[in-house]
Image (tube, rainbow, N blue to C red; front, side, top):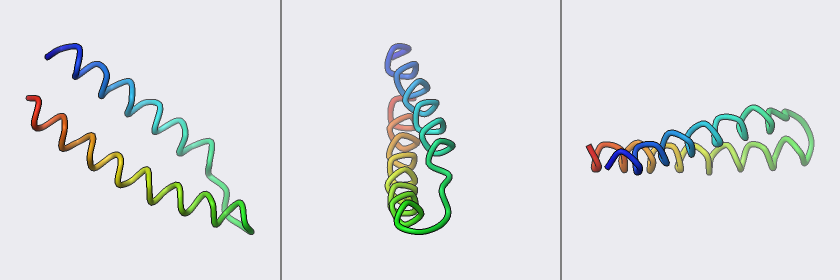
Length: 55
């Protein structure tokens, strides 16, 4: 179970870094970033649920 928790932790860190990298606000880049932010939020929620389930 520790390995799964570590994978979730590393995945979360990668997600946070991607969010920082995609901090665009305007134009089509901003629209893409907003869409990806929505996907990241859904992914974060799924990872949080997986962590609760594995605990």
